[in-house]
Image (spheres, rainbow, N blue to C red):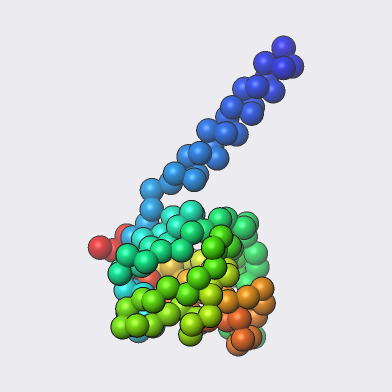
Length: 149
């Protein structure tokens, strides 16, 4: 009986993991000047981010973390993604996310600002391991509206 229950639990965990990995990607429309100029429209899923020009970066979920988006700002809960093959793809207008340095990690969170639509997503790419605003690894903030086409 215990083996049967264990097998069912393992099966359910595998199905949930597959469902999460295959979650429908979100379409993000650029809502900030950096997002308009550098990335254009983005298709985001937990396993890949694809930019308007078709370039993409493979992702792996690396959990969540408390992150301070700006010095002295309150901490927020952000999803952390590791870029499984760090790269610096050439995007809109010959731009790149991290000024030519390979992107190693991406933090993604929903805006908590009053008066902003609930579908606002903020993307913070990092070229290294330091998730500190203003560090050499911080590549800026890109703001999008999720669900907009």
